[in-house]
Length: 187
Image (cartoon, rainbow, N blue to C red; front, side, top):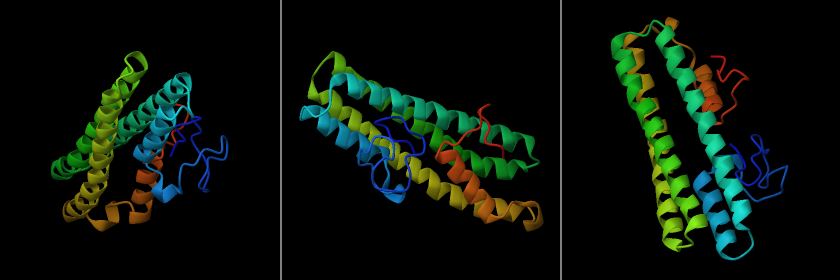
């Protein structure tokens, strides 16, 4: 999970980013919604400049681009595998949900950026509501993906499926945006 303040892709396991010392929470509680809420509060209180806030929004956009590339890599890998049509159908739901979350988050960043041009706090309220919606959509994706894996197991023999540990590791890798130089996840 990125630190949106400085753009560090691996801010460490502690409550504060190891690079910029900004409080981002522990990895299990490190939600972009909370980071953006805190940084928006800092902006409104004068503890953060508009230039710094713009950089934070740019870091968040880069993070979304990385997530999108990771998702495309997973989709490409799924297309290469010999997954039956029923299994592809079941997997399409969480994938589409995750894509929707990325799109909503992108729209949220545009709304938040509007504040920098038109300092109406309504842009911040709308933007943070959209970030919350994106966060909820992506959380829904996790729940649906677990259901999808159970359903896929009905169509594919266990011997042909990757272990749950491998799937969990690959999802974690995709969602923490640790991509290789070519944008693939190396799945």
